[in-house]
Length: 268
Length: 285
Ligand SMILES: Nc1ncnc2c1ncn2[C@@H]1O[C@H](COP(=O)(O)OP(=O)(O)O)[C@@H](O)[C@H]1O
Ligand SMILES: [Mg+2]
Image (cartoon, rainbow over all chains, first blue to last red; front, side, top):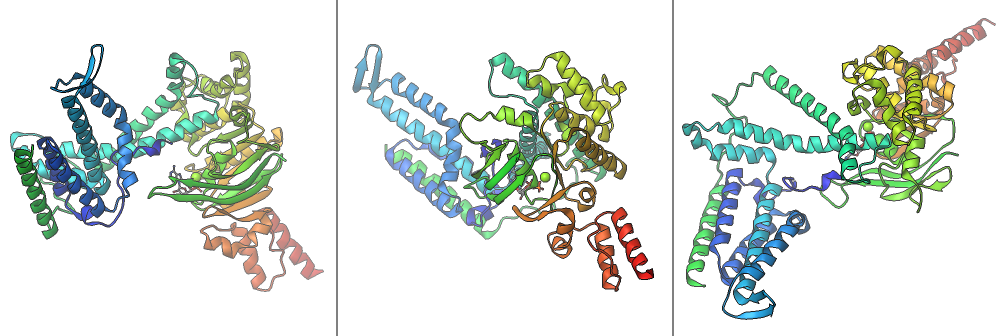
């Protein structure tokens, strides 16, 4: 039941997008998000849509999988749209009722803001769906590498991230198991008022914490037994290498950003 | 007739890339008072199947009847079913949470609506039944040894006084002594309370000595279903699906292959000894 959460879930497939270097995908995602804020007209959004469409097509991830992540932000989406709709002032008033009024500018902002949010989520979902968590943290570590010079513990941050990502499904599974075990003993997690519900969580949370600590302890032991001592002088088993397809991808992405900036300038 | 499983199918993560068809058209009947061994290789669907029996998982196809009533039918109380069909999960000690052993075992009966006194009475009876002495009642469950924790967890389900007790790999991760103690206790329990027991295991050796019937699962399907000796006759096929018949089966088969006219159906060492003795006597006489 808890497994339905898609955030950060990898979708295994063989595609160009899957094979790209994680750094390329991270940079592309950032550029894409920037491009969404550069765009401010129909033409700009059309180009952004085209780009996203082509990437999704290439990734071979079913479309319904990608949109799953949107469910989580429906409320946020509706709220922003409503606020923009009513609060933005414009020249032409389309509708008015008491103090409420909707202007052309309001409609425009509401629609574009919603599109931005949707594309933002879809864009980052494509990245996480086509990149394994390990690759993602590897890429991040490498990208942030220069920050080591100013004493940012980049390796440690990346390691913590990959451990956390690795533990999410494990802890979810554990939660599921303990929950079922307690339900089998007659526990009730659904009915009752807020206080009763909070109290009902105790038989779930206590074992969950104990198991989390046990696992953390085991992991720390296992890491130490293999002489882990942080990032200094540590080499990679599979170092990241740019292939020619990665360079092509960078070329395409920078061209895309240039087009978006030009469009933003001349088509408003 | 207690539990009837009819055409049950279950698919994990249906409609995704991770889809697994874990149960394929399972049909079973488990009558009252039977001691059943459910055996299969890891991943064969044993745990999935037993979680259906007390309604923790809902079949994606087919249905289950408890005492003739459809458990997915309207107005059927799942809570009541769960009090009648007790399920002890794999590594049940991971679900302990209370400050002391007795309070933890009381959790089940308290949820069923029994008063504190009644619950404690049931909890104490259950603890004695699994061989936990009174001196442990007020100890923290986290201070106990692995085998003791597991017994406390089993008592936690027993205290609800179920009509059917399902134990999912109760001996996993225990040393041989702990394993034998738990299995003996379960056998005693069967004798004393006369309840139906389903014992899940991936080891034939463990189960052969105790059960009336063995159900063998493989890749989500029931492969064999019968009394132990019947099932062990398929020892070659059992090997193919990653299981093994008890050692005595191999011994008897080998003796027979060497020309000794022994009864190959012996499933325990005792029976094997008798069979060999009979054969020897027959030769002399
Ligand atoms: N929560 C789950 N989500 C997805 N697949 C699962 C889950 N639990 C079990 N499975 C899969 O279902 C199949 C049967 O598993 P299970 O019933 O646990 O087998 P067993 O108890 O016989 O070892 C296995 O292939 C397993 O990988
Ligand atoms: Mg199992």
